[in-house]
Length: 310
Image 1 (tube, rainbow, N blue to C red):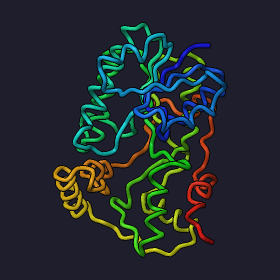
Image 2: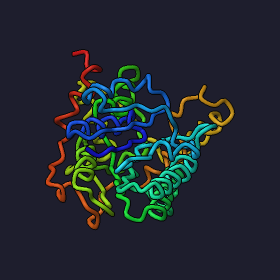
Image 3: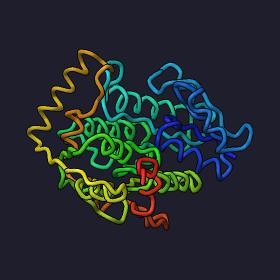
């Protein structure tokens, strides 16, 4: 069975990708910064099937070691905010480009790059702009790459519903930036299934935008969450003008004080909410793989059940 190397395999999406691949018997090499924190991945496969390697996608000199012998390389590495040691450009563009370039040089047959819906070099959001630049850099080095752009991903370990569920347990109001911004939430395991099918069938040069069959505004998502939790909270609509001031302030103090200040709201995040996060009609979708996306209403109780004291 072929060897698949996954970067970011212990992350939210990455762990589901590893589990899907392991279920089909693939040998998997997972590159993670701290293997001791990724030992849970071992249970997804048989003895010796999943190998954890200590490494970092930004270690240019070692990328050759990480990908050698792989038939497929999957890049699930991403960040939603910058730190002193990790910028969007370094991670989403430079590291992704180097990984694609080395993979091509090492004779890797298939390259799968996980981007984001809305990624564009023309975006006003530095986050989405770097994602768009990353796509172009990857395709420049590995022209037959598969690019996957999911909408808002939900699942047991997600940072969206878990974050707002936790906030609702300690606050009487929920601040929402861009309440009318639209999303097509997509179940994490459905995205992982598509990736597994790409690997199984050795697909090349596929460009997929993955979103669920249902569209919700940001406000509707929060209302659904509160209804599931049976909590009454005030949904506080934050204007973009005010949100940008708050975000710039947060970014400034994080620049000065580092990780001591949480990235509760960044300018890149605010600007990414100015446009709807919807799948275009031109790209490949779940239906091209015979997959019917799981509905949010079915999974939501599992995601936030631990926050519901009733």
